[in-house]
Length: 148
Image 1 (cartoon, helix red, strand yellow):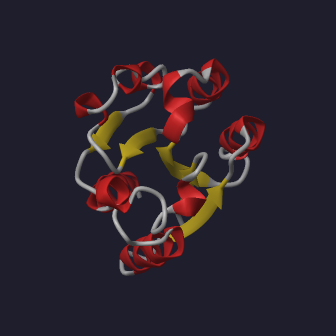
Image 2 (image 1 turned 120 degrees about the vertical axis):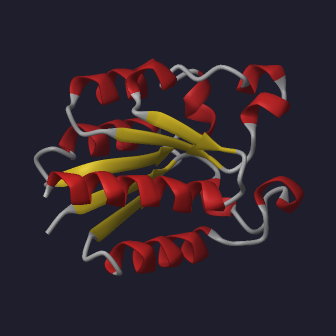
């Protein structure tokens, strides 16, 4: 069975409460449940991890190949803009990564316009609210199906 790892970065545990006008009212548990159903319909297992700690996310990325992960969906949140450690972990593995953001970072504060991880991910999906996650899952599922 193929496996997708969904990684959620800092403050995403506050979804549903944090700036709902930007991030919506769905909680992280709501999103994970819907993603799990989307993947299960294709016979694909999903693992989820949310952390406010950069090193925990780096460890998960590094361990992905050994854990049988075929794809990573990553919302690095604030780490997107400055975490060279996460960037380097992605570059060090052969598991493809899709970068996801709920909001359109290019229409927000200038510091959010640059992603240090963008050069090492397969692609980005952003600005569609939580549908950004579902779009990334659809791409990952399609790519996995083509491989197996």
